[in-house]
View 1 (cartoon, protein in one colour):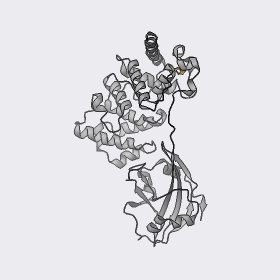
View 2 (cartoon, helix red, strand yellow):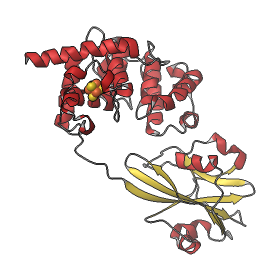
View 3 (tube, protein in one colour):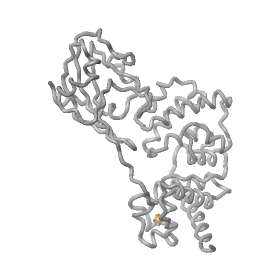
View 4 (cartoon, helix red, strand yellow):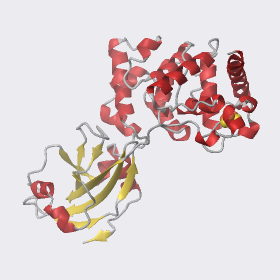
Length: 364
Ligand code: SF4
């Protein structure tokens, strides 16, 4: 028991020592405004710092206060978020800003149990905001923390089980420097992100190596342990690029599915890839939507891939020409001049299509 306590205090002491000389200078560090801390933490969920940084700057500039974000139109917020992925974060951010603005008079909550009630804020983000903004003693636990703790303490219990999660959360809380919870949390996050890396951790140069179990036992590459593998569902999206008089049809994704509130093109989802024109023409939606339009398929792109956490999207873009505008088009669709497409937020796979200016590979 005594040696366990010694190992814990050695960890906290040396982690803080490491942080003094090696912390990452980031624009939100030392920030005390809870709104900006919250904004940075939401942007950094599932996102690398390098990718998130310009988004933080854009949001901070456009919406300097929580009320500015609350009053912004939803399409504008989604457009600003475009390219960052995990769009539910943007929707939740906007909803929470409205809640703070309308229900809390624009004052950010200053207690953990209130912070965690905000949409899109889980235990990790609540602990980060509570400790950075208000100096409250809550330890953060995320992927970096699981990795560092499992290696240093040699914990082989899976991190994705309830008992594993509870064990890591209790250990993280026991290690927290309650005098400086914000500094400690920042230290362990930086240490995981820049030093105890998933592949090639910098063990040779590590203040913890003398007491690091994984280093001593050569088990670094197997820790942390996960019990389940994510099985990705494959989905096949056939996007119809329906052009008429320099306008193209787009639609808002309103259904409960991926990319909610982003825009895309009329979509036919199939259970396998569609390879040739006849198969697309035979599709029931193609027939229904385009009956009487004189539609001609002019080309198709190569399949393009976008990986999400639980899904793999394989998308093809079909270029369609129509002769007759008065067809029974779906009410959700809107015809947009090509030059105005930049005003709408699209998922990554469509952005990629635009950016690479991928002409259909096969022209018909
Ligand atoms: S010795 Fe290596 S594995 Fe152990 S904490 Fe340091 S960097 Fe991580």
